[in-house]
Amino acid sequence: MRTFALGLALLSWSCFSPAASPEDAADYYDEATRRYLTLEKGEFGQTRLTVRFAGDPGSGALWMGQGQRTDKELIFTRIVGEGEAQGTAFIAKISESRIEIDYKPQQKTPQDAGINGTYRRLNESKLLQLAKKEFQAADERLQNSLRTAAKNWDRKDRPALDLWKDQWPSIRQRWLDVFTAQAKGTTLSPAENQPTAPKTAKDWVVAAQATARGYYFVEAMPDSKTGLGWDGEYDDLGAGHASLRLGADGRLRVSLASYRVPGDEAATLEGTAKPESITENKDGSLTAQFTLEDPEVKDPSKQAQVRLTKIGRYLHVETQNAERYAGRGWFSGIYRGSPVPAAP
Image (cartoon, rainbow, N blue to C red; front, side):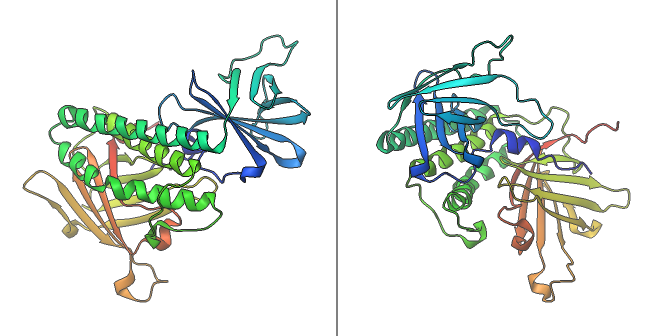
C-alpha cells in the first residue's frame, strides 16, 4: 500500500501551530492583497516573521523567515530545512504603525516570494474583526460550493455529499477543539467531546481554516479514473488517508492514517475485512466491517471496530473504540477516492 505522505500537510497548513503569547507577537495586515504578517520572538535571540496569504478565506499558505533585528530593521531569510539553501535575503523596516519589506540591497537575482510590500499594524480589536470577517467569507464560499456541488456532483456520488453536509458541523467542531486547545497549550482530544466556541482572533482563524478545508474538499472532483469498487487511495478534507485493496482471496485490506497536528506522529490503523463481512447493497453502495484484534485490549467489547461504506467514488469511514490509535486525530469521516497508483 502507498505510504502516507505528510509533507503537504506540513507545508500548506502549518499555520495550525502553537500561537505565540500576545506580549511576544505583533500583527500586521496588507488589505489590498489580504496578507497577514506576524513578528514574534524566535530561537537564539532571533526574530521570526510569518506571512499568511489569505487570498482564499481561511487559506493556510505560509511563508516563514527569521533573522537578527537591530532596532527598527530586520534582515531575514526563509526558514529552511537542513541542507537547503536559504535563498533571497529581505529587509524589513519597522515603525510603530507599519512594516515595509523589500529585497536586501546588492543581491544579483533576488527571488520574489510574494511577501514584499507595506503592512499596517493591527490592534487586537481590528485583528478580531478581520478574523471574524474571514470566517464569514469562508463559510459563505462553503455554502455556495455546496449549492454548486448539489448540481455538479455525479449522481452516484451525491449521497456522499448529503452525508458530508450532515457531518460537517461535527467535523468543523473537531478541528476547533483540537487546534484551539493546542494554541492554549493543552492536550484536548476530539474524543473528549468538549465543544470550543471561537473567542479570540486565533480561534476565528482556526474556524476559517477548517472551513476552507471544507470548501476545498467539496470543490475538488475525484479523478475520472476512480472506480466504483473498493481498490483505491482515499483522502478526507485534512490529512486523513485510507488505502484499500481487495485481494484475490476476497479479503479487503484496509490501512487508515491520520495526521492532524503538525509535530505529532502519524496515527495508523490497519485491518482486514473477511469476505463474509463485505456486502453489495441494492442501491449500489458497498459495505465492509472488521474488528481490530489487539492483544493489548483484554475486553472484547472494547476492541476497535471499523465500518466502511463505498458510495460512488467516495468512502465513508466509521469507527468505534479507535481513539487509542488516533492520537489527537481521528479516522472517521468522508474520503474522496482516487485510483490505485500505477506500478513503477
